[in-house]
Length: 207
Image (cartoon, rainbow, N blue to C red):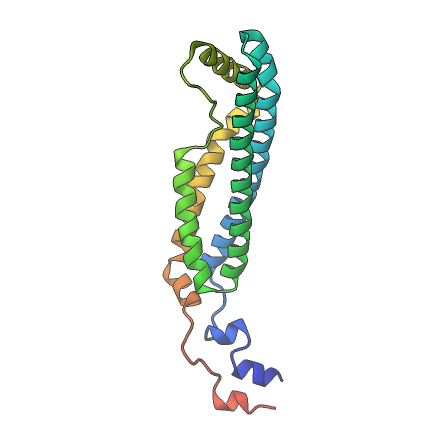
């Protein structure tokens, strides 16, 4: 049974001509794990920030005399954008986690998909991601949104502000470093599947 599986390429080693996973791929997998954890942490932060801002809206409306309709509209906008941002980060983390598993097994298609996701992720993080406030330029609405922003900054923990820039740098740089590692010659040899790779006849007849 073992000889038949080996002869048919049933093991990853046989499919790749006996090549083991190189250090470039192993290091890329570690970096991908870090990116996945960072994305999950970002999703948790987005959820916490959305809830915190929504709790501040009544206080901002009371201090600026904003009408109930304006408070309701701002609450709806904040919830929609904040929860959508949280969901997007969680979905990207799940996709990256699945691609990490497939890349570790040497799937060429997974490497191609990962390249596209890595570039898009770096571009999106470089552009920034915030929870914008709704404002039409009206003086009352401007005062309300300005007060919301002031309260948000005032209640933001210091450690959160300190980690914001490093976290964004990680999300921008690590995917690109991972992509570079997966495109190195050693990685290319690992992902290149030899056509019709079979064990020598003397190996097949052992037993």
